[in-house]
Amino acid sequence: MDIRRRTFRFFPACAFLVVLCLQSCRRDAALERALASAGDNRRELEGVLLHYKDDSLKQAAARFLIANMPYHFYEEEFYALPGGGRYRPRLTDFPREEACNAHLDSLARAGRMGERHRYKDIRTLDSAFLVRNIDLAFEAWRKPWARQVPFPVFCRYILPYRISREYPSGLRKEMMDRFIPLLDSSGVSSPLEACSLLNKRLATVMRYKKNSLPFYPTIEETYAWGGARCEGLCDLGLFVMRAAGIPVVMDRTLWTRMDWGHNWGAVWHEGRFHSFAPGEQLPGEYLPVLNSRGHLRPAKVYRSHFEPCPASGSGEVPDDGYGTWLKSPLLEDVSMEYLDRPVDVRVSTDRIREFAHASG
Image 1 (cartoon, helix red, strand yellow):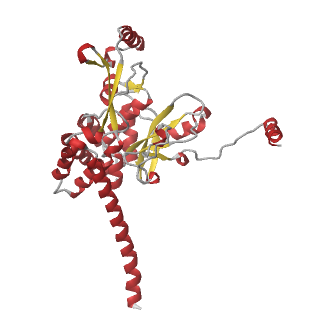
Image 2: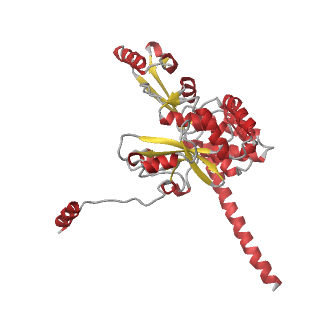
Image 3: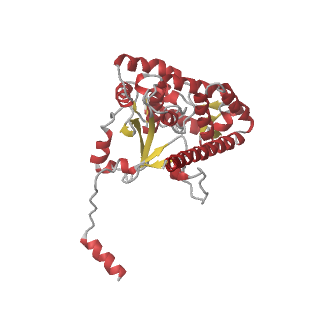
């Protein structure tokens, strides 16, 4: 009987170890693929791993970032000037959209054309940038409202240095210095409380503002100008949240009754996500907005991760010639978190008779 009991205990333990080994092998393979794709930047990335050789937790964080960097890129956008110069208008120079439009029209009349150059994170971000980001993220993770955040959640929703496809920002320390004292003095003790309080403050820092600049906004531009469209607001708002040690992620949809789409945030708290609009609606307030206004009710909602979602397998998506961001392996379908009640679908009886006649 004792032998049988020991055997029953032995097999689950072995199975658990096998699963851990398989996961470790996959992570090692992903890291090696990333390093192999880094080109001349490989030495910089290996320098990060070497820097944390005596800190297993920070090295694990570095491995997570580097393994997933091949999925991320940024773009330098500017107007080309004679002689090879580059010019990017500063939004702070144009307090009104009309003035910005007039300036852009003058550039067009002068024959100035916008250019866009894409760069991969894995080939360009250096060791100093990554080490600084990792150290600051761990510093924020020690805060009372972040102590309950598990390491895997920390890696996914606090550690990453980018939110979307914005130009990598060096403002993490500045955001920490400005906004963490607010949370320290308030006594908040959970990610949800911290997110709610900080989002109220963000409402005084930024707001929805249109501009005609044909370039994707940087974190620095949105922060200096005090506004942007929804994606720019999300980039800045979630960047500030992560800098403060709050686990957040971007959710997005394509409107079914309007052009374009929309982006907002979600904060992790006790294993669940709570939606909010950066600088606008607080957690718990935004979901009713989406569910109560017919023209805003999304057909699908996707969560944008730093790492590929499990459903995407290896993260490689076959090229079928059809380009859409919906094919990104970083997107997770989270529609069921939002479509939380039955939807009545009404079809007129006249249409039913037409279909029946056509099929007959």
